[in-house]
Length: 328
Image (cartoon, rainbow, N blue to C red; front, side):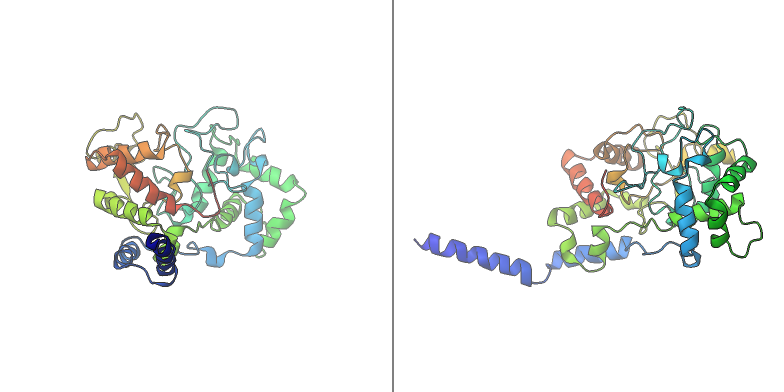
């Protein structure tokens, strides 16, 4: 009888505590570490303060424009899909170009790309503007024969002359390849993701579950922040893939640009923002699942073998870094 009376009472007390009492000391401590070690992602990308509505509108149209590929089959969005709830990738190991041939590397997400210190896996482009110029003329990707042919198509289009004039009002001849890249970059600077982890860092203690908080602790304990640091959790440095234990790949990475022996197998560290949405993984796209990626990185980069339970905890935390409006 007493049990029947007190059980509902205890449930009410527990619910009351969860709703009206503040966070535990442990949660406060975890939130403090999240704020200090990682931090929240800024709401705007560098350079966006100079972007006008007309420039962004033009950039968005160009981002989805298939006329920028030789056979009009590909756009920027083909490999870096942001339509609907897509996470800025095509979720393929490597992406097919205009004539069906696949590239050599996995297409990274365009979400938050403007926060990265360089672009592409090997950092061959300094910023979004420089990056936007590459794929259009790449014979494997969009395969346009020349800048001249690109500009010819834009000038012949019924919409672009007016749109370029509005976006670049001070230019006598606004339709240039440089302005095209500038506009695409402006649109890409709007692609900032907002995650539950950011809410947690900013003081919403309920944004992460107890299990997800434990996952963050496991992430720190494993030493993942030795590479995946800062508010991007990566995207701000180069590292050799297979730093501790060899990772077999024929791709020499940064060495292809610098020809320095120390740059063999060196790549930009990917950001872990949206990582659970953007598989398959690594520069070659050969790792299918996030669980396998976590275990392989721990082994090849840190020299540790994570247990299945540790891996699950870390993956649970990584899920909190995903944009709240997007899915895989």
